[in-house]
Image 1: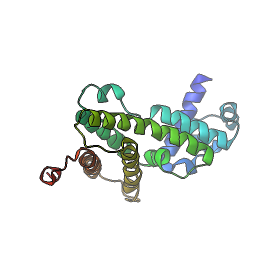
Image 2 (image 1 turned 120 degrees about the vertical axis):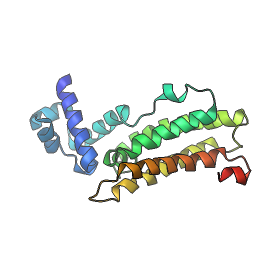
Image 3 (image 1 turned 135 degrees about the horizontal axis):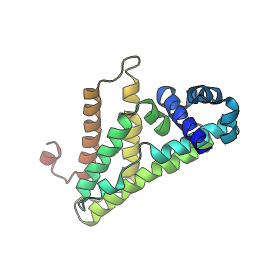
Image 4 (image 1 turned 60 degrees about the vertical axis):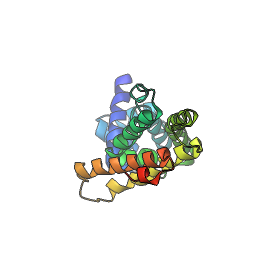
Length: 200
């Protein structure tokens, strides 16, 4: 049963990566996994259950942050730089999967899971920003609003690779996009009131 579930998850991930959740059906998961439709129903009682469970399982293992790497440094600015690089690089290299997990319109039930998924990222940024404020490295600001703004930037950025339509976004363009998103957030958060340094 565990092997079957693993095969179904990999099949679902393949479909979501290529077509988003809108392309995910029980029949398609069965076909891609090489299992019978009946085998899918052993794990998922309906399409809605399939979508919900696949979303939950994908968000437990894909596009997550490496906390150990982020907190290797005790410096909030270094932590913030690392966390932003992880967030944008992992998401913006994942194309349809990233869009599906962060932004694709889904049912209200799955949206509740999405809120919790995003809250994990927001909490990391909230904590780093709060620490930077406490240490007087960052100017006073509302960590919750700033963390939400970071996720809003990500949501918009996930659409950019998809707009290349039938042409895959080149790697060098992705790297530039990742860097620009990271720098935008860094400059916004770490701005210290000196415009000459802000625009360097």
